[in-house]
Image (cartoon, rainbow, N blue to C red; front, top):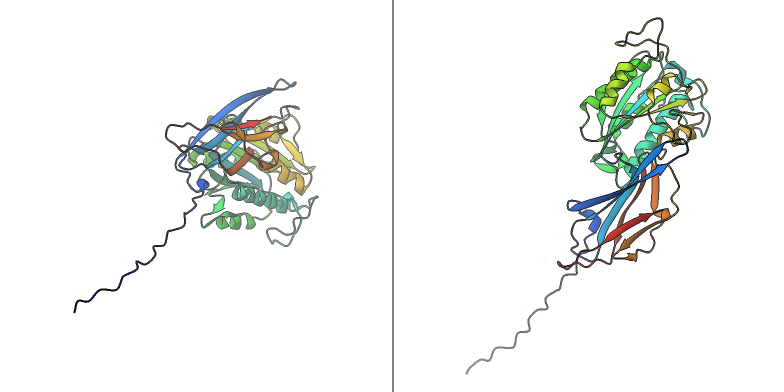
Length: 352
Protein backbone atom coordinates (compact mmCIF):
# COMPACT_ATOMS: atom_id res chain seq x y z
CA UNK A 1 0.00 0.00 0.00
CA UNK A 2 1.29 3.51 -0.70
CA UNK A 3 2.88 5.25 2.27
CA UNK A 4 2.09 8.89 2.82
CA UNK A 5 5.02 10.69 4.47
CA UNK A 6 4.27 12.61 7.62
CA UNK A 7 4.40 16.40 7.19
CA UNK A 8 7.69 17.93 8.22
CA UNK A 9 7.59 21.18 10.11
CA UNK A 10 10.67 23.27 9.35
CA UNK A 11 12.75 24.21 12.37
CA UNK A 12 12.47 27.87 13.32
CA UNK A 13 15.33 30.01 12.11
CA UNK A 14 16.75 32.28 14.78
CA UNK A 15 17.02 35.89 13.73
CA UNK A 16 20.29 37.33 15.05
CA UNK A 17 19.93 40.32 17.27
CA UNK A 18 21.35 43.49 15.76
CA UNK A 19 24.87 44.16 16.92
CA UNK A 20 25.48 47.67 18.17
CA UNK A 21 28.76 49.16 17.00
CA UNK A 22 30.05 52.06 19.07
CA UNK A 23 30.79 54.89 16.61
CA UNK A 24 33.73 55.90 18.79
CA UNK A 25 35.42 52.53 18.31
CA UNK A 26 36.27 53.38 14.68
CA UNK A 27 38.69 56.26 14.28
CA UNK A 28 40.15 55.28 10.92
CA UNK A 29 37.73 57.38 8.87
CA UNK A 30 37.71 60.56 10.93
CA UNK A 31 37.80 64.15 9.77
CA UNK A 32 38.74 67.31 11.68
CA UNK A 33 37.84 70.93 11.18
CA UNK A 34 39.00 73.95 13.13
CA UNK A 35 38.38 77.65 13.65
CA UNK A 36 40.67 80.27 15.17
CA UNK A 37 39.83 83.39 17.15
CA UNK A 38 42.24 86.04 18.44
CA UNK A 39 42.04 87.48 21.95
CA UNK A 40 43.74 90.84 22.53
CA UNK A 41 44.95 91.81 26.00
CA UNK A 42 45.74 95.14 27.62
CA UNK A 43 49.35 94.03 27.99
CA UNK A 44 49.62 94.03 24.20
CA UNK A 45 49.69 90.25 24.01
CA UNK A 46 47.54 88.41 21.48
CA UNK A 47 46.46 84.82 21.99
CA UNK A 48 45.14 82.85 19.01
CA UNK A 49 42.85 80.07 20.23
CA UNK A 50 41.98 77.15 17.97
CA UNK A 51 38.76 75.13 18.32
CA UNK A 52 39.00 71.67 16.75
CA UNK A 53 36.08 69.32 16.09
CA UNK A 54 36.59 65.72 14.96
CA UNK A 55 33.80 63.48 13.64
CA UNK A 56 33.41 60.48 11.38
CA UNK A 57 33.94 61.23 7.70
CA UNK A 58 30.80 59.35 6.67
CA UNK A 59 27.67 58.44 8.62
CA UNK A 60 26.72 54.78 8.30
CA UNK A 61 24.00 55.10 10.95
CA UNK A 62 22.14 57.94 12.63
CA UNK A 63 25.00 58.31 15.14
CA UNK A 64 28.56 59.56 15.03
CA UNK A 65 31.47 60.10 17.42
CA UNK A 66 32.44 63.64 18.36
CA UNK A 67 35.58 64.84 20.13
CA UNK A 68 37.79 67.91 20.10
CA UNK A 69 39.35 70.67 22.09
CA UNK A 70 40.49 74.25 22.37
CA UNK A 71 44.23 74.88 22.24
CA UNK A 72 46.60 77.65 21.31
CA UNK A 73 46.85 77.89 17.55
CA UNK A 74 49.50 75.45 16.36
CA UNK A 75 49.58 73.83 19.81
CA UNK A 76 47.48 70.81 18.88
CA UNK A 77 48.32 67.09 18.95
CA UNK A 78 50.57 65.26 18.41
CA UNK A 79 53.05 66.35 21.10
CA UNK A 80 56.68 65.90 22.10
CA UNK A 81 56.81 66.75 25.82
CA UNK A 82 60.23 67.18 27.38
CA UNK A 83 60.54 67.26 31.18
CA UNK A 84 63.72 68.48 32.90
CA UNK A 85 63.79 67.50 36.57
CA UNK A 86 66.12 68.99 39.19
CA UNK A 87 67.59 66.25 41.42
CA UNK A 88 70.29 68.36 43.11
CA UNK A 89 70.99 67.86 46.83
CA UNK A 90 68.66 70.68 47.84
CA UNK A 91 65.65 68.77 46.48
CA UNK A 92 65.89 66.63 49.63
CA UNK A 93 64.63 69.64 51.63
CA UNK A 94 61.07 69.57 53.01
CA UNK A 95 58.28 71.07 50.92
CA UNK A 96 54.89 72.45 51.91
CA UNK A 97 51.41 71.70 50.73
CA UNK A 98 49.51 68.44 50.66
CA UNK A 99 51.91 65.73 51.93
CA UNK A 100 53.14 63.46 49.14
CA UNK A 101 54.74 60.87 51.40
CA UNK A 102 57.95 59.14 50.40
CA UNK A 103 57.23 58.85 46.69
CA UNK A 104 60.62 57.40 45.72
CA UNK A 105 61.13 55.37 48.93
CA UNK A 106 64.45 57.04 49.78
CA UNK A 107 63.56 57.37 53.46
CA UNK A 108 62.97 61.14 53.23
CA UNK A 109 59.24 61.84 52.81
CA UNK A 110 57.51 65.04 51.76
CA UNK A 111 60.52 66.73 50.23
CA UNK A 112 60.96 68.72 47.02
CA UNK A 113 61.94 65.72 44.92
CA UNK A 114 58.87 63.84 46.16
CA UNK A 115 56.77 66.80 45.04
CA UNK A 116 58.40 66.82 41.59
CA UNK A 117 57.81 63.10 41.15
CA UNK A 118 54.22 63.24 42.42
CA UNK A 119 53.47 66.08 40.01
CA UNK A 120 55.04 64.18 37.11
CA UNK A 121 52.97 61.10 37.92
CA UNK A 122 49.85 63.27 38.05
CA UNK A 123 50.63 64.55 34.55
CA UNK A 124 51.02 60.98 33.27
CA UNK A 125 47.76 59.94 34.94
CA UNK A 126 46.04 62.89 33.30
CA UNK A 127 47.31 61.81 29.88
CA UNK A 128 46.16 58.23 30.51
CA UNK A 129 42.68 59.41 31.53
CA UNK A 130 42.16 61.87 28.66
CA UNK A 131 40.49 60.49 25.57
CA UNK A 132 42.38 62.56 23.02
CA UNK A 133 45.87 61.97 24.47
CA UNK A 134 47.78 58.71 24.55
CA UNK A 135 50.67 56.70 23.17
CA UNK A 136 49.67 57.46 19.59
CA UNK A 137 50.09 61.23 19.93
CA UNK A 138 52.22 61.96 23.02
CA UNK A 139 55.95 61.30 23.29
CA UNK A 140 57.73 61.91 26.60
CA UNK A 141 61.41 62.80 27.07
CA UNK A 142 63.01 62.80 30.53
CA UNK A 143 66.18 64.69 31.51
CA UNK A 144 67.51 64.96 35.07
CA UNK A 145 70.23 67.27 36.32
CA UNK A 146 72.39 68.08 39.31
CA UNK A 147 76.19 68.50 39.01
CA UNK A 148 75.72 67.13 35.49
CA UNK A 149 72.68 66.17 33.46
CA UNK A 150 71.45 62.90 31.98
CA UNK A 151 69.00 62.34 29.15
CA UNK A 152 67.09 59.13 29.90
CA UNK A 153 65.40 58.70 26.51
CA UNK A 154 61.93 58.70 24.99
CA UNK A 155 58.93 57.03 26.61
CA UNK A 156 55.30 56.35 25.82
CA UNK A 157 53.20 57.97 28.56
CA UNK A 158 50.89 54.99 29.06
CA UNK A 159 51.25 51.27 29.55
CA UNK A 160 51.17 49.64 26.07
CA UNK A 161 49.14 46.79 27.57
CA UNK A 162 46.73 49.10 29.40
CA UNK A 163 46.33 52.62 27.95
CA UNK A 164 44.50 53.73 31.10
CA UNK A 165 47.61 53.13 33.25
CA UNK A 166 50.97 54.91 33.45
CA UNK A 167 53.87 53.36 31.51
CA UNK A 168 55.57 51.11 34.12
CA UNK A 169 59.04 51.68 32.63
CA UNK A 170 58.66 55.44 32.90
CA UNK A 171 57.23 55.14 36.41
CA UNK A 172 60.16 52.94 37.47
CA UNK A 173 62.62 55.55 36.20
CA UNK A 174 60.93 58.35 38.13
CA UNK A 175 60.83 56.33 41.34
CA UNK A 176 64.54 55.53 41.04
CA UNK A 177 65.63 59.19 41.20
CA UNK A 178 67.60 60.43 44.22
CA UNK A 179 68.78 63.87 45.41
CA UNK A 180 72.51 64.60 45.04
CA UNK A 181 74.89 67.23 43.70
CA UNK A 182 74.91 70.82 42.48
CA UNK A 183 72.78 72.72 39.91
CA UNK A 184 73.84 72.91 36.26
CA UNK A 185 71.16 74.49 34.05
CA UNK A 186 73.48 74.61 31.04
CA UNK A 187 74.08 70.87 30.87
CA UNK A 188 70.39 70.24 31.52
CA UNK A 189 69.56 72.23 28.38
CA UNK A 190 72.30 70.45 26.41
CA UNK A 191 70.88 67.06 27.32
CA UNK A 192 67.23 67.90 26.68
CA UNK A 193 68.20 69.05 23.18
CA UNK A 194 69.03 65.39 22.52
CA UNK A 195 65.35 64.56 23.05
CA UNK A 196 64.05 67.09 20.54
CA UNK A 197 66.71 66.04 18.03
CA UNK A 198 65.48 62.44 18.02
CA UNK A 199 61.78 62.98 18.72
CA UNK A 200 59.29 62.59 15.85
CA UNK A 201 59.19 65.61 13.55
CA UNK A 202 56.09 67.62 12.74
CA UNK A 203 54.78 67.74 16.32
CA UNK A 204 54.07 70.44 18.87
CA UNK A 205 57.22 70.61 21.03
CA UNK A 206 56.93 71.63 24.68
CA UNK A 207 59.55 71.76 27.45
CA UNK A 208 58.89 71.88 31.21
CA UNK A 209 62.01 72.89 33.18
CA UNK A 210 61.76 72.35 36.96
CA UNK A 211 64.27 73.62 39.51
CA UNK A 212 64.30 74.45 43.21
CA UNK A 213 67.39 76.66 43.10
CA UNK A 214 69.68 78.84 41.05
CA UNK A 215 72.43 77.57 38.73
CA UNK A 216 75.85 77.35 40.35
CA UNK A 217 77.97 75.73 37.63
CA UNK A 218 79.25 77.29 34.41
CA UNK A 219 78.37 75.66 31.12
CA UNK A 220 80.20 75.12 27.87
CA UNK A 221 80.18 76.34 24.30
CA UNK A 222 79.03 79.91 24.88
CA UNK A 223 82.30 81.45 25.99
CA UNK A 224 81.32 81.44 29.66
CA UNK A 225 83.89 83.10 31.88
CA UNK A 226 84.23 84.72 35.28
CA UNK A 227 81.67 82.45 36.85
CA UNK A 228 78.91 83.11 34.28
CA UNK A 229 76.33 80.43 35.07
CA UNK A 230 73.52 81.93 32.98
CA UNK A 231 74.79 81.95 29.41
CA UNK A 232 72.58 79.58 27.42
CA UNK A 233 72.71 81.32 24.05
CA UNK A 234 73.64 78.29 21.96
CA UNK A 235 71.25 75.95 23.75
CA UNK A 236 68.26 78.27 23.50
CA UNK A 237 69.03 78.97 19.84
CA UNK A 238 69.00 75.23 19.16
CA UNK A 239 65.67 74.81 20.95
CA UNK A 240 64.26 77.67 18.90
CA UNK A 241 65.11 75.69 15.77
CA UNK A 242 62.65 73.05 16.99
CA UNK A 243 60.03 75.70 17.93
CA UNK A 244 60.05 74.47 21.53
CA UNK A 245 57.64 76.19 23.91
CA UNK A 246 59.68 76.46 27.09
CA UNK A 247 57.91 76.56 30.47
CA UNK A 248 60.16 77.20 33.48
CA UNK A 249 58.92 76.47 37.01
CA UNK A 250 60.72 77.57 40.16
CA UNK A 251 60.06 75.32 43.15
CA UNK A 252 60.25 76.90 46.59
CA UNK A 253 61.64 80.20 47.88
CA UNK A 254 65.25 79.40 46.96
CA UNK A 255 64.40 79.43 43.26
CA UNK A 256 64.43 82.67 41.32
CA UNK A 257 62.15 83.88 38.54
CA UNK A 258 63.37 87.47 38.62
CA UNK A 259 64.15 89.16 35.29
CA UNK A 260 67.52 87.90 34.08
CA UNK A 261 67.46 84.79 36.29
CA UNK A 262 68.26 81.41 34.81
CA UNK A 263 64.62 80.34 34.76
CA UNK A 264 63.59 83.67 33.24
CA UNK A 265 66.11 83.22 30.42
CA UNK A 266 64.86 79.69 29.72
CA UNK A 267 61.13 80.49 29.66
CA UNK A 268 59.61 81.83 26.42
CA UNK A 269 55.91 81.60 27.32
CA UNK A 270 55.05 84.83 29.17
CA UNK A 271 51.70 85.25 30.86
CA UNK A 272 49.37 87.33 28.67
CA UNK A 273 48.43 89.61 31.59
CA UNK A 274 51.71 90.08 33.46
CA UNK A 275 54.12 89.29 30.59
CA UNK A 276 56.17 87.33 33.16
CA UNK A 277 57.44 84.00 31.87
CA UNK A 278 58.39 81.55 34.61
CA UNK A 279 56.20 80.75 37.60
CA UNK A 280 57.23 80.03 41.17
CA UNK A 281 55.37 77.56 43.36
CA UNK A 282 55.68 76.97 47.10
CA UNK A 283 53.43 73.93 47.62
CA UNK A 284 52.99 70.45 46.18
CA UNK A 285 49.53 71.43 44.96
CA UNK A 286 50.91 74.51 43.24
CA UNK A 287 53.53 72.45 41.42
CA UNK A 288 50.97 69.99 40.08
CA UNK A 289 48.75 72.89 39.03
CA UNK A 290 51.67 74.58 37.25
CA UNK A 291 52.45 71.47 35.21
CA UNK A 292 48.80 70.90 34.37
CA UNK A 293 47.89 74.56 33.92
CA UNK A 294 45.71 75.38 30.95
CA UNK A 295 47.66 77.55 28.46
CA UNK A 296 44.41 78.81 26.94
CA UNK A 297 43.41 82.02 28.72
CA UNK A 298 39.79 82.65 29.62
CA UNK A 299 36.76 80.98 31.15
CA UNK A 300 34.25 79.02 29.10
CA UNK A 301 30.78 80.46 29.67
CA UNK A 302 28.91 78.24 27.21
CA UNK A 303 29.51 75.11 25.15
CA UNK A 304 27.15 73.24 22.86
CA UNK A 305 27.15 70.70 20.04
CA UNK A 306 24.47 70.77 17.35
CA UNK A 307 23.58 68.09 14.82
CA UNK A 308 21.76 69.43 11.79
CA UNK A 309 20.73 72.51 13.74
CA UNK A 310 19.47 70.66 16.81
CA UNK A 311 21.31 71.11 20.11
CA UNK A 312 22.45 67.81 21.64
CA UNK A 313 21.08 67.60 25.20
CA UNK A 314 23.37 66.90 28.13
CA UNK A 315 26.49 68.50 26.63
CA UNK A 316 27.61 71.77 28.21
CA UNK A 317 30.62 73.36 29.94
CA UNK A 318 30.69 70.51 32.48
CA UNK A 319 31.56 68.20 29.56
CA UNK A 320 34.93 69.92 29.11
CA UNK A 321 38.15 69.21 30.99
CA UNK A 322 41.25 71.38 31.35
CA UNK A 323 44.89 70.35 31.27
CA UNK A 324 48.39 71.11 30.05
CA UNK A 325 47.31 71.23 26.39
CA UNK A 326 44.13 73.30 26.80
CA UNK A 327 40.44 72.36 26.93
CA UNK A 328 39.31 68.94 25.69
CA UNK A 329 35.87 67.38 25.16
CA UNK A 330 34.52 63.99 24.18
CA UNK A 331 34.34 61.45 22.90
CA UNK A 332 30.55 61.74 22.72
CA UNK A 333 28.14 59.61 20.70
CA UNK A 334 25.57 61.94 19.17
CA UNK A 335 22.50 61.11 17.12
CA UNK A 336 20.30 62.88 14.59
CA UNK A 337 22.28 62.11 11.44
CA UNK A 338 20.81 61.02 8.11
CA UNK A 339 22.92 58.17 6.68
CA UNK A 340 21.49 58.46 3.17
CA UNK A 341 24.09 59.08 0.48
CA UNK A 342 22.44 62.22 -0.82
CA UNK A 343 22.54 64.01 2.53
CA UNK A 344 25.34 66.09 4.02
CA UNK A 345 25.07 66.26 7.80
CA UNK A 346 26.24 69.28 9.79
CA UNK A 347 27.84 68.84 13.21
CA UNK A 348 28.75 72.09 14.94
CA UNK A 349 30.58 72.93 18.18
CA UNK A 350 30.04 76.39 19.69
CA UNK A 351 31.92 77.99 22.57
CA UNK A 352 31.61 81.34 24.28
